[in-house]
Length: 132
Image (cartoon, rainbow, N blue to C red):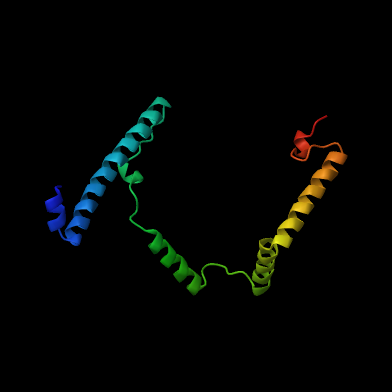
């Protein structure tokens, strides 16, 4: 597309042109992916075949997903935390978000590491990996 054509085209026409170009490229990429998978499946001796449509997106956007999630929450289909659980969670977040809370957390980790070393265990190893 030349500069003059770009400046003359309306935003709606440009959007339609880009969508058409994207759809063609997406289809070619889906075919390539399906061919790669089918070649690997054939080498593995599998009778399963993959169609290019399996690699094409459903067309749903993040905005659609968020709208669906909010509607499910409003209908009560997604379990909400109790007010006690929510309060405890917020308290933990506030505590660790402050400098004092972060220092306290680091001190606890340091103390646990010192105790592990004193007991002859490396602080990064689990019990199944502990040296004998």
